[in-house]
Amino acid sequence: MTKLKILSETDTSLRILFSGVNRAFVNSLRRTMISDVPKFAIDQMRVELGVFKNEETGELFESNYALSDEQLAHRFSMLPIPTFHDDFYFQDECPDCKDMVVDQRGCPSCQIIYTISSSGEEGGRSVVASEMNVIGDRRLEIPEAYGSIPLTKLFEGQVLHAYFYAIMGRGRDHAKYSPVSGVTFYARQNGKINVKTRSKMLFDLNLNITAKDFNKDGTLNDIDKVDLLRNDLNHVGSGTDLEAQFNDAITLEDVEGEFIFQFETDGSMTARTCLEQACKELAGRFEALSNDFAEAL
Ligand SMILES: [Zn+2]
Image 1: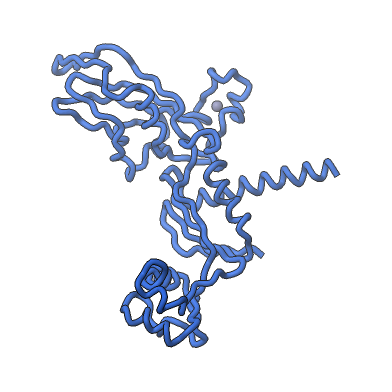
Image 2 (image 1 turned 90 degrees about the vertical axis):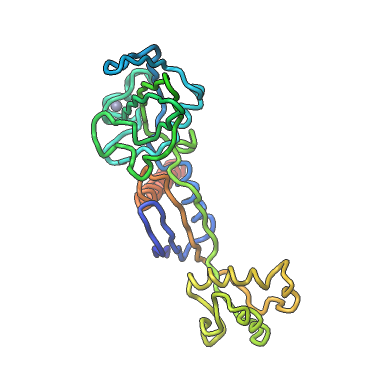
């Protein structure tokens, strides 16, 4: 039976121990997170062109800046847009928009609109993510933690007036829709003393792990300590002076059916939401598959 134990959790990261699974299962979860968990991202940008006058100072600004429109659009599109899966639809599934032609789609249930109005100053000023304003629901503002993401630089006389349209998509269509970064997993390992006398060589280096950390039978099972042991073993392993002498006196061995899975989100959703959505997507896909089978057989 598949079991899951959370080893550590923050808002945007999770480390989980899976047991009773195989590599293919954990990998399917990883791939689903990267390419199938829906996320909002800016998909269209409308820049107001022209010359603008500051009414107070009489200063003139022009919509002209160093970055090309494409670069600018790319920078904005990679911003983490808060995603609430239960409150929004894909545009082609939105009850109000799905029957419209693609260009006409977009309503409060399937689109989020942001605006920015920034002007430059002498010597240049960085335009950051916190300057964007959402039209509507305040909880869709760019999260405070990501407010300092630099987007472009504006100099004296330059201005950026623009609207941004974010929609929900999937990572398989564009990386901007992928909610995760650094999704990895590895087999859980246990430490094992093979030759007690030679293992002293490692402990004598006074690193993290001592002989006392091991169980009486010469094994080490604690996940955090095994991680430390893995680091320690680099001091006596391949490419070191002690390699030949130490000769694998302590080794790490894979635990059958257990994997440590870890990932971070980009801030558009919590790590827990991302995991739940990934499970939902996978379950949905297998359900569709078994329905197909049932029909075919
Ligand atoms: Zn809609």
